Length: 512
Image (tube, rainbow, N blue to C red):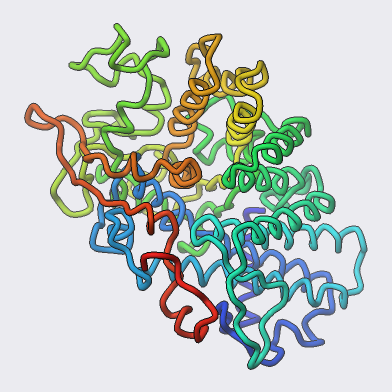
């Protein structure tokens, strides 16, 4: 889908243009007139364009690790600094941009569903397109409900002078998402076999998103059952090499369930990725926008499966040796070799790490110098998340049975990781902590930590700890002490502009 996903979308926006924020209400536009909804090509082009509303990975997914104990943002005077420090308001731009972008996507989905039956085309293919759009609408609502709480459920585009609806409850939004995903799973194909369709939604993507949103809302019975459905599809498995999982040479492998496809040799960042530029080390001309914390680095076990405070393998003079291999695949420390060059942190200068660490995952060594847009696909959902979601849910339901051990051990014993299997005889509480640790390590810098700490309700405990970095001049760099108000900060603010335009229909989240 690399070419069609991007090029067809650009052609679409060259043909069709309209101002479609969430609050736009107007007469029928070019997207709904008789001349547009007439051919299969119209349907394919329109459906492809809806994918462009999936969240940009740089500012809205990867950056969210900077709002957790995993990292701190470097550019603290921008929106990410306010969110990380607990000083964000209803005018913080990332809140407004996320809200607007996702509701724009929802509007596009609703325009499609209003018009698709007007097109004379193969019925089976039509149903697949409907499944795609329902999946995407569920994806947009999943983003919104996890970040903002309950939001208005829209099933059709708002018309001229139509009242802006009030917010629906989190439970109602969750039910709506699950309904869309159940319907999408029935319509979507098990696999995309045509090269031009790689990257489009599948049955497994719909079931996986249902697993993730159900885990987030602690619907453990639904999460375990749906994760098992994904596991039993026989389509997905763990990719052997953890490091290469996040590089372009092995994209679209068996672990990838749903991703953002980028074009190699892209002419600009509408076709290519900003990840290398934004997060790469200064030694490769990157901006080092996110700095891993010492707390994260210390959480990687030694190769004997023990914490650094217990393992005889840990040497504080050589702290990165004999550690879980995922540490070296994820984090750069001083003198770590990247693209044949030792990493030299320039803490204190512009566009430089605040902790002495930089992250390595997703940074393509073949784009050294960041001379062109990146082409590494960003993975929204992968099979490892399904395994650990299953383990979490099943453990909460019945404790650590054999299936829970099997799911976690698959992750730990990936050939390129090869950590020891779990100790037998763990209690439910001990297994819970093991799974939470494993999720932190496995998914560092994939935008999952923020969501996990929210649904476990531990964000205030992990974020308010003092933030330290690597050793410098005989002591760890002290970075900052962050604030987190549990009465307010578990949800983002509804953008002030939307509150004002709604004339009282939208009620703000507490504390803003």
